[in-house]
Length: 387
Image (cartoon, rainbow, N blue to C red; front, side):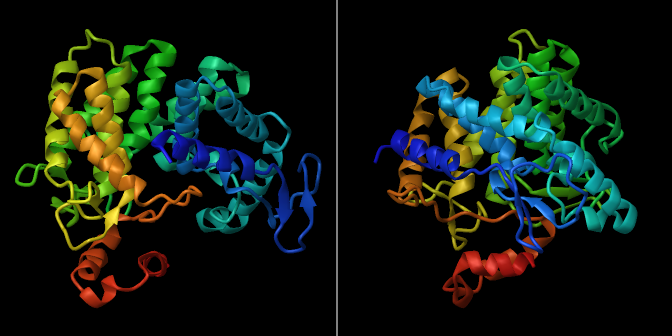
C-alpha cells in the first residue's frame, strides 16, 4: 500500500471503532447518555477515542489535516461529533458532579480514575494543550459557544496559572519543582500558535516564540546537536536521555508555530535558525533503515516509529515551506520508507514507545545496554516498567 492508503486505513479504523456510550464497569450496565442518571463513580466513557487526553488532541489535528489534504469532510465531522459528545449532549454535567465528589472524598489520586477528569483538572498542559488546540481548529470551522468557552479557559490557565520560571518558560512542579520537559514545548505551543491564529493577538505568538527559544536554551546539547528530555532547575542537571519522541515534540512544535507565525514577526528569523539547527542535528542520527532509535544517540536501542514520524513530518514540512534546503527531503523519504516497514497492510503499527516519564530513562539506558533484555518483548517490558 502507498503511504496515503495506509494513512486512510488507520484513520478510517479510528472512525469505525469509536463508540459513543458509557458503561458502569462494576455492574456492566450500559448507557447511551448519562444525562439525568444518579452520579456513580463506576460509570466511564467506553471508547478510548472520546477520552479527554492529549493523544486524542494530536489525533484530532491529524485527522482534520488529513481531511483537508483529501478534500473529505468526514474526518473533521468525526472530530466535531466527538467534541459535541463531550460538550453539547448533556453528558458533561454528570462527569463534573462525579469529579467534584471524587475530589472531595479522595483528592487528586481519586479523580485520576475518572473519565474526562482532565477537562476539569486543568493542572498541567497534558490536560488542555493539544485537546484545546484541536478545539481551536474546530472552532475556526464550526464555531460554538461551548467550544469557545473551553478555549478561553485554557488560554487563561496558560496565561495566569501554568507554572513558569521567572523568565516565562513553562515548567512542571514534578518530579522536581520547576522541571522543564521537552514534551511541553508541543503541549503549549500547539495551543498558543493556534490561539494566535484564532485571535490575531500577537501576545500568543510572542509567548510561543519565546517558549521555543527558552526550551532550546535549557535543553539543547551542543555536543550532540539534539535536545535532552528535561532539565531540573533546582539542581541544574539535565535528564540523562536524548529521547527520540521528546526531540520530536520540540520539532513539531516549531513547525506548528512557523506555519502560522506572521512573516514580519521579530523573532521569525531566529526561530528559522533554531528549526534548521534541530533538523541538521536530527538528520545525523537517522539509522540505516531510515528510522530513528528510541534513544537517538544509542544505536543499540530499538528503532521507534513515533519519533521517526515526527521527524519525517517536520522535515517534509520544512522542505515544502522553504524553511529547509531541498536536499533534506531525502531524509524524510528514507524515514517514511522505514515507517512503512513497521505498518502492516491492516494498519497495525509496531515499534511504538509508550508514554515515558523523565524518571524512567535511567532504567531504559540500562535496558538497551543489556543484550538479553533486548530479546524480550519490548512492549510488554515497558508496560511492566511503567507499573
